[in-house]
Length: 401
Image 1 (cartoon, rainbow, N blue to C red):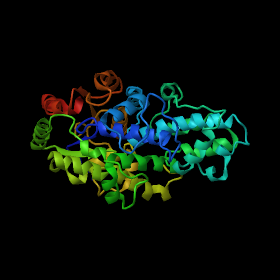
Image 2: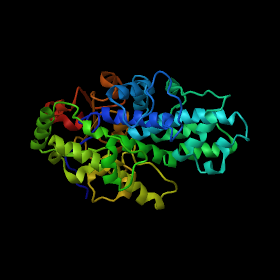
Image 3: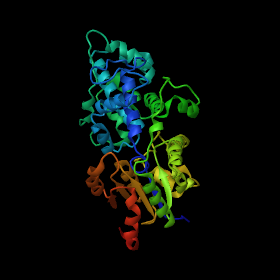
Image 4: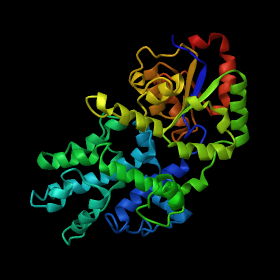
């Protein structure tokens, strides 16, 4: 017998926590891969600073402005249901790498920079230095084209289906290498994630959490600048009001546990959330690993897949295999609300049969309102502090909203 509890499940970034540090870390990751001498080592030109492990605030602002085209790239991928900032960094760098590989493939099979044996299983961060030598040849003056990513190359694809689009222009042996390079589970993706974590956590936290040395030493760590999205007293008052009304509060986030616990503990709001209803990247990653043997192919359980929201609603006593499909697990109307700021959150909520509240504190801001309404959000609110008033006003007919 299923136990239908009254739960409100929050996404974190863009709802309670600010995403600025994550977006900055994503931009710095792309910058390092393109301009760090230990990777591609390109010349940054006049728009970007020379690569260093110690960029100041002004440098970071400039890097993000150029690479993300005044944040148009962030908005572009948000609309494509890209929920993870690791994926954001990966797609932005992988797009530029695809442009490089197209350049190489036009030179014919004799171009060893693309078809060398070491690249057979896909290009890794360690192989980028080999490509850099070819890019510096006299007959090549290749430069990144950051605005090009805003084109129509994605088609109707969204979320974790986007990387495979980068391999479509290739053929033959080049196609096989491109597919392995641009897979969301590729060594390149793992490398991008590691570099991102170095920037976000900083050298000391990175070594403590991962028990290994970072690829590049000296990074301070943007996590030190983490801040709540709204005034913390208002967030506390909202969570307290919901808790006192009998709602169980959960979290489904793409953050690893360590990057969730530390900021929320520091803000003094960790204890408002039911520990059995907190699902992080670590839970999703472990489920993907555990289920790999019983599935025909490896799948992604990150949003917009409903796994994390389902796991948060039903609790960790329910097996991961039950969460693969929402069939038979839809909560009763009005007993589960998902609060998010992105299309990935909305699509995941819809797949699990939960009611969705869209808040306008994410990157899309007020412009997200029309999209949320079009896609079936049951409410669109200015921010999460309006949730208690909305639920109390509609309490009598909550199942019919």
